[in-house]
Image (cartoon, rainbow, N blue to C red):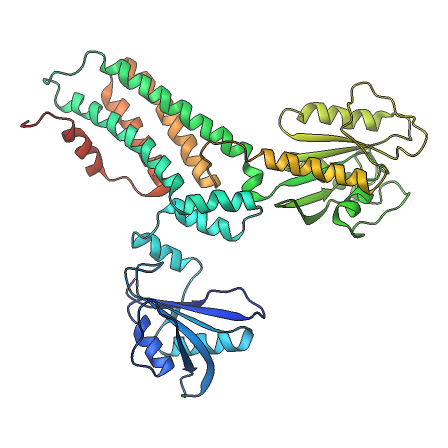
Length: 445
Protein backbone atom coordinates (compact mmCIF):
# COMPACT_ATOMS: atom_id res chain seq x y z
CA UNK A 1 0.00 0.00 0.00
CA UNK A 2 2.84 2.40 -0.84
CA UNK A 3 0.88 4.19 -3.56
CA UNK A 4 -1.25 7.25 -2.86
CA UNK A 5 -5.00 7.08 -3.46
CA UNK A 6 -7.69 9.72 -3.92
CA UNK A 7 -11.46 10.02 -4.34
CA UNK A 8 -14.32 12.44 -3.88
CA UNK A 9 -15.62 11.71 -0.37
CA UNK A 10 -18.97 13.53 -0.63
CA UNK A 11 -22.10 12.36 -2.45
CA UNK A 12 -22.62 13.18 -6.12
CA UNK A 13 -24.71 16.25 -6.78
CA UNK A 14 -24.83 19.97 -6.08
CA UNK A 15 -24.14 21.12 -2.53
CA UNK A 16 -22.36 23.81 -0.57
CA UNK A 17 -19.05 21.90 -0.41
CA UNK A 18 -17.36 18.85 -1.84
CA UNK A 19 -14.45 17.00 -0.25
CA UNK A 20 -11.57 15.35 -2.11
CA UNK A 21 -9.59 12.95 0.09
CA UNK A 22 -5.98 11.91 -0.54
CA UNK A 23 -4.15 9.20 1.46
CA UNK A 24 -0.62 7.83 1.18
CA UNK A 25 3.08 8.71 1.27
CA UNK A 26 2.76 11.37 -1.45
CA UNK A 27 -0.38 13.05 -0.07
CA UNK A 28 1.45 16.11 1.32
CA UNK A 29 3.64 16.42 -1.78
CA UNK A 30 0.54 16.36 -4.00
CA UNK A 31 -1.16 19.01 -1.84
CA UNK A 32 1.85 21.28 -2.26
CA UNK A 33 1.84 20.63 -5.99
CA UNK A 34 -1.81 21.56 -6.61
CA UNK A 35 -1.79 24.59 -4.27
CA UNK A 36 1.70 25.97 -4.96
CA UNK A 37 2.20 26.24 -1.18
CA UNK A 38 5.29 24.98 0.65
CA UNK A 39 3.94 24.38 4.13
CA UNK A 40 0.81 22.97 5.75
CA UNK A 41 0.33 22.90 9.51
CA UNK A 42 -0.96 19.59 10.87
CA UNK A 43 -4.71 19.62 11.70
CA UNK A 44 -5.01 23.24 10.65
CA UNK A 45 -7.45 24.56 8.05
CA UNK A 46 -5.55 26.44 5.34
CA UNK A 47 -7.42 28.64 2.87
CA UNK A 48 -5.60 28.41 -0.45
CA UNK A 49 -5.98 28.44 -4.22
CA UNK A 50 -6.06 25.09 -6.05
CA UNK A 51 -4.64 24.75 -9.57
CA UNK A 52 -4.79 22.21 -12.39
CA UNK A 53 -1.80 20.65 -14.13
CA UNK A 54 -1.60 23.69 -16.47
CA UNK A 55 -1.32 26.01 -13.42
CA UNK A 56 -4.81 27.38 -14.09
CA UNK A 57 -6.90 28.36 -11.07
CA UNK A 58 -9.70 25.89 -10.27
CA UNK A 59 -11.06 27.14 -6.95
CA UNK A 60 -10.25 28.73 -3.59
CA UNK A 61 -10.51 25.87 -1.10
CA UNK A 62 -9.73 24.79 2.44
CA UNK A 63 -6.97 22.19 2.78
CA UNK A 64 -6.56 20.04 5.91
CA UNK A 65 -3.43 17.97 6.58
CA UNK A 66 -3.52 14.94 8.91
CA UNK A 67 -0.04 13.58 9.53
CA UNK A 68 0.44 9.81 9.94
CA UNK A 69 -0.44 7.97 12.08
CA UNK A 70 -3.06 10.44 13.37
CA UNK A 71 -5.57 10.06 10.55
CA UNK A 72 -8.42 7.74 9.55
CA UNK A 73 -6.12 5.54 7.45
CA UNK A 74 -3.08 5.99 9.76
CA UNK A 75 -1.29 7.39 6.69
CA UNK A 76 -0.66 10.99 5.63
CA UNK A 77 -4.10 12.32 4.63
CA UNK A 78 -5.06 15.50 2.82
CA UNK A 79 -8.66 16.70 2.56
CA UNK A 80 -9.54 19.44 0.09
CA UNK A 81 -12.85 21.17 0.82
CA UNK A 82 -13.97 22.99 -2.31
CA UNK A 83 -17.19 24.61 -3.51
CA UNK A 84 -19.82 21.98 -4.22
CA UNK A 85 -21.01 20.88 -7.63
CA UNK A 86 -19.98 18.49 -10.37
CA UNK A 87 -17.30 20.46 -12.18
CA UNK A 88 -15.10 21.91 -9.41
CA UNK A 89 -14.66 18.65 -7.47
CA UNK A 90 -13.99 16.65 -10.64
CA UNK A 91 -11.44 19.24 -11.80
CA UNK A 92 -9.56 19.07 -8.48
CA UNK A 93 -9.71 15.25 -8.54
CA UNK A 94 -8.22 15.31 -12.04
CA UNK A 95 -5.45 17.63 -10.84
CA UNK A 96 -4.64 15.29 -7.92
CA UNK A 97 -4.49 12.31 -10.27
CA UNK A 98 -2.15 14.22 -12.59
CA UNK A 99 0.11 14.97 -9.60
CA UNK A 100 0.70 11.27 -8.91
CA UNK A 101 -2.24 9.75 -7.06
CA UNK A 102 -4.48 6.98 -8.35
CA UNK A 103 -8.24 6.67 -8.04
CA UNK A 104 -9.24 4.71 -4.94
CA UNK A 105 -11.38 1.61 -5.28
CA UNK A 106 -14.64 1.22 -3.31
CA UNK A 107 -13.92 1.02 0.42
CA UNK A 108 -10.16 1.36 -0.02
CA UNK A 109 -9.73 4.11 2.58
CA UNK A 110 -11.43 1.92 5.20
CA UNK A 111 -9.43 -1.08 3.99
CA UNK A 112 -6.20 0.82 4.61
CA UNK A 113 -7.45 1.87 8.04
CA UNK A 114 -8.00 -1.83 8.84
CA UNK A 115 -4.62 -3.04 7.54
CA UNK A 116 -2.85 -0.22 9.37
CA UNK A 117 -4.51 -1.20 12.66
CA UNK A 118 -6.65 1.92 12.89
CA UNK A 119 -9.95 -0.03 12.97
CA UNK A 120 -10.99 -3.68 13.12
CA UNK A 121 -13.54 -5.43 10.90
CA UNK A 122 -16.46 -4.83 13.27
CA UNK A 123 -15.73 -1.11 13.35
CA UNK A 124 -15.37 -1.03 9.55
CA UNK A 125 -18.80 -2.67 9.16
CA UNK A 126 -20.30 -0.19 11.63
CA UNK A 127 -18.93 2.71 9.57
CA UNK A 128 -20.42 1.29 6.36
CA UNK A 129 -23.83 0.68 7.93
CA UNK A 130 -23.92 4.02 9.75
CA UNK A 131 -23.89 5.77 6.37
CA UNK A 132 -27.08 3.88 5.42
CA UNK A 133 -28.72 3.82 8.87
CA UNK A 134 -32.53 3.61 8.65
CA UNK A 135 -33.31 4.99 12.13
CA UNK A 136 -31.87 7.12 14.91
CA UNK A 137 -31.76 4.06 17.18
CA UNK A 138 -29.72 2.17 14.59
CA UNK A 139 -27.35 5.14 14.27
CA UNK A 140 -26.81 5.12 18.06
CA UNK A 141 -26.02 1.38 18.08
CA UNK A 142 -23.61 1.76 15.16
CA UNK A 143 -21.90 4.79 16.72
CA UNK A 144 -21.21 2.69 19.83
CA UNK A 145 -19.80 -0.10 17.68
CA UNK A 146 -17.58 2.36 15.84
CA UNK A 147 -16.11 3.12 19.26
CA UNK A 148 -15.45 -0.58 19.88
CA UNK A 149 -18.43 -1.87 21.91
CA UNK A 150 -18.85 -5.00 19.77
CA UNK A 151 -15.08 -5.39 19.59
CA UNK A 152 -14.90 -5.51 23.39
CA UNK A 153 -17.66 -8.13 23.57
CA UNK A 154 -16.07 -10.33 20.90
CA UNK A 155 -12.63 -10.02 22.49
CA UNK A 156 -13.96 -11.10 25.90
CA UNK A 157 -15.64 -14.22 24.45
CA UNK A 158 -12.60 -14.96 22.33
CA UNK A 159 -10.24 -14.67 25.30
CA UNK A 160 -12.40 -17.04 27.36
CA UNK A 161 -12.21 -19.69 24.61
CA UNK A 162 -8.45 -19.17 24.20
CA UNK A 163 -8.00 -19.57 27.95
CA UNK A 164 -9.89 -22.90 27.89
CA UNK A 165 -7.92 -23.96 24.83
CA UNK A 166 -4.70 -23.22 26.68
CA UNK A 167 -5.69 -25.58 29.51
CA UNK A 168 -6.51 -28.26 26.96
CA UNK A 169 -3.12 -27.86 25.24
CA UNK A 170 -1.36 -28.04 28.60
CA UNK A 171 -3.20 -31.28 29.34
CA UNK A 172 -2.05 -32.75 26.02
CA UNK A 173 1.59 -31.65 26.06
CA UNK A 174 2.32 -31.58 29.80
CA UNK A 175 0.34 -34.53 31.09
CA UNK A 176 2.83 -35.16 33.91
CA UNK A 177 1.96 -31.82 35.50
CA UNK A 178 -0.59 -31.71 38.30
CA UNK A 179 -3.91 -30.39 37.02
CA UNK A 180 -7.08 -29.60 39.00
CA UNK A 181 -9.22 -32.71 39.41
CA UNK A 182 -12.38 -30.84 38.48
CA UNK A 183 -10.82 -29.29 35.36
CA UNK A 184 -13.20 -31.03 32.94
CA UNK A 185 -16.23 -29.89 34.94
CA UNK A 186 -14.92 -26.31 35.08
CA UNK A 187 -14.32 -26.25 31.32
CA UNK A 188 -17.77 -27.71 30.61
CA UNK A 189 -19.50 -25.11 32.81
CA UNK A 190 -17.59 -22.26 31.20
CA UNK A 191 -18.42 -23.49 27.67
CA UNK A 192 -22.11 -23.79 28.61
CA UNK A 193 -22.04 -20.19 29.86
CA UNK A 194 -20.44 -18.99 26.62
CA UNK A 195 -22.94 -20.95 24.49
CA UNK A 196 -25.86 -19.42 26.43
CA UNK A 197 -24.41 -15.90 26.12
CA UNK A 198 -23.88 -16.23 22.36
CA UNK A 199 -27.35 -17.70 21.89
CA UNK A 200 -28.92 -14.70 23.66
CA UNK A 201 -26.88 -12.34 21.49
CA UNK A 202 -27.92 -14.19 18.34
CA UNK A 203 -31.63 -14.13 19.21
CA UNK A 204 -31.51 -10.45 20.16
CA UNK A 205 -29.74 -9.59 16.90
CA UNK A 206 -32.21 -11.47 14.72
CA UNK A 207 -35.20 -9.94 16.52
CA UNK A 208 -33.77 -6.45 15.92
CA UNK A 209 -32.82 -7.01 12.29
CA UNK A 210 -35.36 -4.45 11.11
CA UNK A 211 -33.59 -1.84 13.19
CA UNK A 212 -30.46 -2.22 11.05
CA UNK A 213 -31.86 -3.01 7.63
CA UNK A 214 -34.97 -0.84 7.87
CA UNK A 215 -38.37 -2.20 8.83
CA UNK A 216 -40.64 -3.64 6.15
CA UNK A 217 -44.39 -3.31 6.67
CA UNK A 218 -46.65 -5.45 4.47
CA UNK A 219 -50.31 -4.46 4.03
CA UNK A 220 -52.35 -7.59 3.26
CA UNK A 221 -56.02 -8.39 2.71
CA UNK A 222 -58.45 -9.67 0.12
CA UNK A 223 -59.24 -7.47 -2.93
CA UNK A 224 -61.06 -4.17 -2.39
CA UNK A 225 -60.66 -3.91 1.39
CA UNK A 226 -58.79 -0.58 1.07
CA UNK A 227 -55.10 -1.60 1.06
CA UNK A 228 -54.10 0.94 -1.60
CA UNK A 229 -56.13 3.68 0.11
CA UNK A 230 -54.33 2.90 3.36
CA UNK A 231 -50.94 3.07 1.61
CA UNK A 232 -51.84 6.46 0.15
CA UNK A 233 -52.97 7.67 3.58
CA UNK A 234 -49.70 6.57 5.21
CA UNK A 235 -47.65 8.24 2.46
CA UNK A 236 -49.92 11.30 2.47
CA UNK A 237 -50.15 11.31 -1.34
CA UNK A 238 -51.82 9.20 -4.05
CA UNK A 239 -49.17 6.62 -4.90
CA UNK A 240 -51.38 3.60 -5.63
CA UNK A 241 -54.34 3.43 -8.00
CA UNK A 242 -57.62 3.11 -6.08
CA UNK A 243 -60.53 1.40 -7.86
CA UNK A 244 -63.66 -0.60 -7.10
CA UNK A 245 -62.45 -3.24 -9.58
CA UNK A 246 -61.08 -6.31 -7.79
CA UNK A 247 -57.49 -7.08 -8.68
CA UNK A 248 -56.49 -3.48 -9.52
CA UNK A 249 -53.19 -3.95 -7.63
CA UNK A 250 -51.54 -6.83 -9.48
CA UNK A 251 -48.03 -6.49 -8.07
CA UNK A 252 -46.47 -5.34 -4.84
CA UNK A 253 -45.93 -1.57 -4.55
CA UNK A 254 -43.05 -0.50 -2.28
CA UNK A 255 -42.53 3.00 -0.91
CA UNK A 256 -40.41 4.47 1.88
CA UNK A 257 -41.77 6.78 4.55
CA UNK A 258 -40.40 8.08 7.85
CA UNK A 259 -42.41 7.17 10.96
CA UNK A 260 -41.01 8.61 14.16
CA UNK A 261 -37.25 8.13 13.98
CA UNK A 262 -37.49 5.18 11.58
CA UNK A 263 -37.25 5.10 7.79
CA UNK A 264 -39.50 2.18 6.79
CA UNK A 265 -40.58 0.46 3.59
CA UNK A 266 -44.33 -0.06 3.20
CA UNK A 267 -45.42 -2.80 0.80
CA UNK A 268 -48.93 -2.67 -0.69
CA UNK A 269 -49.71 -6.22 -1.82
CA UNK A 270 -52.08 -7.69 -4.39
CA UNK A 271 -55.35 -8.93 -2.91
CA UNK A 272 -54.98 -12.52 -1.69
CA UNK A 273 -57.57 -14.77 -3.35
CA UNK A 274 -57.91 -17.63 -5.83
CA UNK A 275 -57.04 -16.20 -9.25
CA UNK A 276 -57.33 -17.65 -12.76
CA UNK A 277 -55.44 -14.73 -14.36
CA UNK A 278 -51.71 -15.65 -14.62
CA UNK A 279 -50.48 -12.10 -13.94
CA UNK A 280 -52.73 -11.71 -10.91
CA UNK A 281 -51.66 -15.14 -9.63
CA UNK A 282 -47.98 -14.09 -9.79
CA UNK A 283 -48.90 -10.89 -7.94
CA UNK A 284 -50.55 -12.92 -5.17
CA UNK A 285 -47.43 -15.11 -4.87
CA UNK A 286 -45.38 -11.95 -4.43
CA UNK A 287 -47.80 -10.83 -1.73
CA UNK A 288 -47.06 -14.01 0.22
CA UNK A 289 -43.33 -13.41 -0.27
CA UNK A 290 -43.80 -9.87 1.06
CA UNK A 291 -45.28 -11.29 4.27
CA UNK A 292 -42.28 -13.58 4.69
CA UNK A 293 -39.79 -10.73 4.28
CA UNK A 294 -41.60 -8.18 6.48
CA UNK A 295 -41.18 -7.63 10.21
CA UNK A 296 -44.62 -6.03 10.56
CA UNK A 297 -47.85 -7.14 8.84
CA UNK A 298 -50.97 -4.96 8.69
CA UNK A 299 -53.96 -7.25 7.97
CA UNK A 300 -56.90 -5.23 6.62
CA UNK A 301 -60.52 -6.38 6.69
CA UNK A 302 -63.70 -4.75 5.30
CA UNK A 303 -66.32 -4.50 8.04
CA UNK A 304 -69.09 -3.76 5.50
CA UNK A 305 -68.82 -7.14 3.75
CA UNK A 306 -69.84 -10.60 4.88
CA UNK A 307 -67.02 -12.98 5.76
CA UNK A 308 -65.97 -15.25 2.88
CA UNK A 309 -63.26 -17.82 2.18
CA UNK A 310 -60.76 -15.09 1.30
CA UNK A 311 -61.17 -13.50 4.75
CA UNK A 312 -60.73 -16.91 6.36
CA UNK A 313 -57.51 -17.42 4.38
CA UNK A 314 -56.15 -14.07 5.66
CA UNK A 315 -57.13 -15.11 9.22
CA UNK A 316 -55.23 -18.37 8.68
CA UNK A 317 -52.12 -16.43 7.61
CA UNK A 318 -52.39 -14.27 10.74
CA UNK A 319 -52.48 -17.40 12.89
CA UNK A 320 -49.51 -18.85 11.01
CA UNK A 321 -47.28 -15.80 11.44
CA UNK A 322 -48.44 -14.39 14.78
CA UNK A 323 -45.45 -15.89 16.64
CA UNK A 324 -42.79 -14.68 14.19
CA UNK A 325 -44.23 -11.33 13.00
CA UNK A 326 -45.69 -8.24 14.58
CA UNK A 327 -49.27 -8.28 13.26
CA UNK A 328 -51.75 -5.41 13.44
CA UNK A 329 -55.33 -6.41 12.59
CA UNK A 330 -57.28 -3.46 11.16
CA UNK A 331 -61.01 -3.06 10.45
CA UNK A 332 -61.85 -0.69 7.60
CA UNK A 333 -65.06 1.04 6.40
CA UNK A 334 -66.61 1.17 9.87
CA UNK A 335 -68.81 4.09 8.77
CA UNK A 336 -70.91 1.58 6.78
CA UNK A 337 -73.30 -1.07 8.08
CA UNK A 338 -71.24 -3.77 9.81
CA UNK A 339 -71.62 -7.23 8.29
CA UNK A 340 -68.23 -8.75 9.16
CA UNK A 341 -68.35 -11.38 11.90
CA UNK A 342 -65.34 -13.64 12.55
CA UNK A 343 -64.80 -14.73 16.16
CA UNK A 344 -61.19 -15.76 15.60
CA UNK A 345 -60.09 -12.14 15.02
CA UNK A 346 -59.39 -9.42 17.55
CA UNK A 347 -59.06 -6.01 15.91
CA UNK A 348 -56.35 -3.61 17.03
CA UNK A 349 -57.51 -0.54 15.12
CA UNK A 350 -60.62 0.64 13.25
CA UNK A 351 -60.17 3.05 10.35
CA UNK A 352 -62.61 5.77 9.40
CA UNK A 353 -60.66 9.05 9.50
CA UNK A 354 -57.24 10.67 9.53
CA UNK A 355 -57.26 10.34 13.31
CA UNK A 356 -57.62 6.58 12.93
CA UNK A 357 -54.70 6.50 10.50
CA UNK A 358 -52.68 8.39 13.13
CA UNK A 359 -53.50 5.62 15.62
CA UNK A 360 -52.07 3.08 13.18
CA UNK A 361 -48.95 5.19 12.69
CA UNK A 362 -48.52 5.44 16.48
CA UNK A 363 -48.85 1.65 16.78
CA UNK A 364 -46.23 1.11 14.06
CA UNK A 365 -43.85 3.50 15.81
CA UNK A 366 -44.45 1.75 19.14
CA UNK A 367 -43.55 -1.65 17.67
CA UNK A 368 -40.39 -0.30 16.05
CA UNK A 369 -39.28 1.49 19.21
CA UNK A 370 -39.79 -1.70 21.23
CA UNK A 371 -37.27 -3.48 18.98
CA UNK A 372 -34.43 -1.52 20.60
CA UNK A 373 -35.38 -2.16 24.23
CA UNK A 374 -32.92 -5.04 24.59
CA UNK A 375 -29.62 -4.44 26.36
CA UNK A 376 -28.03 -7.42 24.62
CA UNK A 377 -25.05 -6.85 22.33
CA UNK A 378 -26.14 -6.68 18.69
CA UNK A 379 -24.64 -8.26 15.59
CA UNK A 380 -25.12 -5.97 12.60
CA UNK A 381 -24.46 -8.15 9.54
CA UNK A 382 -25.09 -11.61 8.12
CA UNK A 383 -21.32 -12.19 8.22
CA UNK A 384 -21.21 -11.59 11.97
CA UNK A 385 -24.30 -13.72 12.59
CA UNK A 386 -22.84 -16.61 10.55
CA UNK A 387 -19.58 -16.39 12.50
CA UNK A 388 -21.39 -16.59 15.86
CA UNK A 389 -23.55 -19.49 14.65
CA UNK A 390 -20.40 -21.37 13.58
CA UNK A 391 -18.76 -20.59 16.94
CA UNK A 392 -21.77 -21.98 18.82
CA UNK A 393 -21.76 -25.09 16.64
CA UNK A 394 -18.07 -25.76 17.41
CA UNK A 395 -18.60 -25.18 21.13
CA UNK A 396 -21.46 -27.69 21.07
CA UNK A 397 -19.37 -30.21 19.12
CA UNK A 398 -16.54 -29.82 21.66
CA UNK A 399 -18.67 -31.25 24.49
CA UNK A 400 -18.54 -34.82 23.13
CA UNK A 401 -14.73 -35.28 22.94
CA UNK A 402 -14.42 -33.47 26.28
CA UNK A 403 -16.60 -36.12 27.94
CA UNK A 404 -14.40 -38.86 26.44
CA UNK A 405 -11.13 -37.06 27.29
CA UNK A 406 -10.27 -36.86 23.57
CA UNK A 407 -8.51 -33.55 24.01
CA UNK A 408 -6.97 -33.34 20.53
CA UNK A 409 -10.45 -33.33 18.95
CA UNK A 410 -11.71 -31.04 21.70
CA UNK A 411 -8.89 -28.57 20.96
CA UNK A 412 -9.65 -28.73 17.23
CA UNK A 413 -13.23 -27.56 17.79
CA UNK A 414 -12.10 -24.79 20.16
CA UNK A 415 -9.53 -23.61 17.62
CA UNK A 416 -12.30 -23.43 15.02
CA UNK A 417 -14.50 -21.51 17.48
CA UNK A 418 -11.75 -18.98 18.13
CA UNK A 419 -11.15 -18.52 14.39
CA UNK A 420 -14.85 -17.88 13.79
CA UNK A 421 -15.12 -15.33 16.61
CA UNK A 422 -11.88 -13.69 15.51
CA UNK A 423 -13.19 -13.28 11.96
CA UNK A 424 -15.63 -10.66 13.31
CA UNK A 425 -12.80 -8.41 14.49
CA UNK A 426 -9.29 -9.63 13.68
CA UNK A 427 -7.50 -12.88 12.74
CA UNK A 428 -6.49 -15.30 15.50
CA UNK A 429 -2.78 -15.66 16.16
CA UNK A 430 -1.56 -18.95 17.64
CA UNK A 431 0.94 -17.01 19.78
CA UNK A 432 -1.98 -15.73 21.85
CA UNK A 433 -2.88 -19.28 22.85
CA UNK A 434 0.76 -19.96 23.78
CA UNK A 435 0.85 -16.81 25.92
CA UNK A 436 -2.26 -17.97 27.75
CA UNK A 437 -0.89 -21.47 28.12
CA UNK A 438 2.50 -20.56 29.55
CA UNK A 439 1.07 -17.60 31.46
CA UNK A 440 -0.95 -20.03 33.58
CA UNK A 441 2.21 -21.80 34.77
CA UNK A 442 3.71 -21.12 38.18
CA UNK A 443 6.61 -18.66 38.41
CA UNK A 444 9.94 -20.41 37.77
CA UNK A 445 8.43 -23.18 35.62
